[in-house]
Image 1 (cartoon, one colour):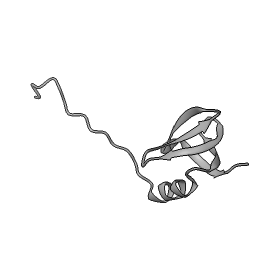
Image 2 (image 1 turned 120 degrees about the horizontal axis):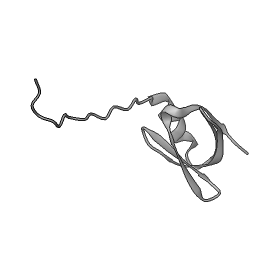
Image 3 (image 1 turned 180 degrees about the horizontal axis):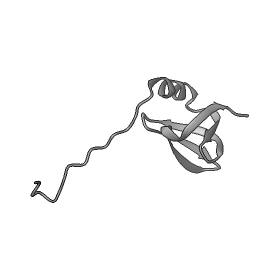
Image 4 (image 1 turned 120 degrees about the vertical axis):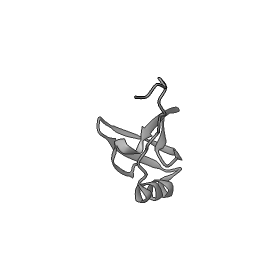
Length: 75
């Protein structure tokens, strides 16, 4: 029996190296990102191993990589 009421918490995030590399090549460009809920178009301003930031009309949208269905360049 565990007498310690606090248990350890472990953060787990999947890393997809091919998606990460692709997103890095698109950094600074205008993209369309399809998520599970909608399509977001704007400038890809930041790429990290677990999320991206898309600037849409001066508002940053933080998108978890696990939510991305597809990404393409946008006009």
